[in-house]
Figure (cartoon, one colour):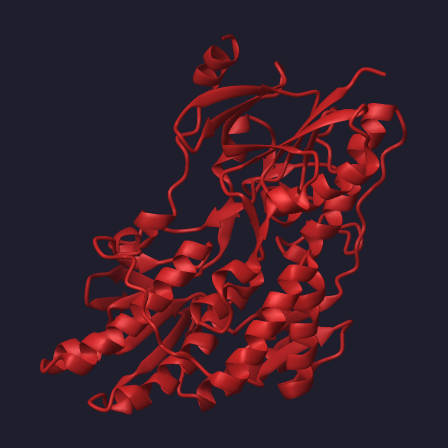
Length: 447
């Protein structure tokens, strides 16, 4: 049998796990596997708030591709176009060089990007929580605001620097606000000139309640925990403008603020729109077998694909979560192998195992297998889940050791200061490639 060329785009949960399963299922004689990823690691996104809070180190949740993947060729770059007819993926390497990567079968798992809106000042002054650089930069920024407020004699400046706004009442927003609120509260002992009443965290969301997927009871429990810590939760409202020292809400309220963290949802990678294929709310339309309808050489999964949720039915699609992406990867790899060896495809079916939300310290809310938990039992389940989901023993050991050390020794509140000359805003860290138009793609793939 002729060796098949398999290309996987993206090294998130979906892409990384797909490649791992392919390596186990295909010999070197069966297929040449190529992974396209701008970074040399798989990022465990759910623990980014812990990195921002200084609870764990950034390396602990960056799983190295070159150590985990034994015989996959890794191209350091991002896919900027895919010619589905010519079976060519166009890649811009991290050097800027553009190359064509031919394939026989391709797995599209480019993930998602932060979903933003045309809000004045958001791109310039807003901060994200989608990658390691943003998490580390946010921690630096928060500590810097306390330092600057502590040293300032201007009352209006002190108020603005001590006010922190998180937009998004989902898991990312709630966990970010909860974990960083604990950082600023603990740090007050080191900044005696600050008035504790001025240090305030605000969570803003247009939805009527926090994390509706958790259910009314746990959503209310999370709200009560945040309120007990002094976090101001404003539901049914959003942001209309962001300036250097203020945030204006759609309710008309103006909050003095120099820190706005934007976690209001995600959108599929722009690569999907550049494909010219059918989409569902911006996500690649695929069947339950994860293949584009009518084709057995193109598969999509993870945040970028609208995978039918057969367990729920009624046209529902799977949520863009790590739990689903990791399990879709197993089916995607099986079906790639099946396509190569002319065997039947499998359909993806998964019953949601529940949700976990870490609120820092001993506080959490969780719904494993439909059972509602809060407090220390929920925290034990939450952290146990993360340890099991991490894909390597080294990562589990590092994260477990970090949690233990932080619980015993606390935080040193160190600001690294590596962002001198950069603001750490969305415009610094969340830029996408210049994706090719259909005409540019055709011209490139003819070369």
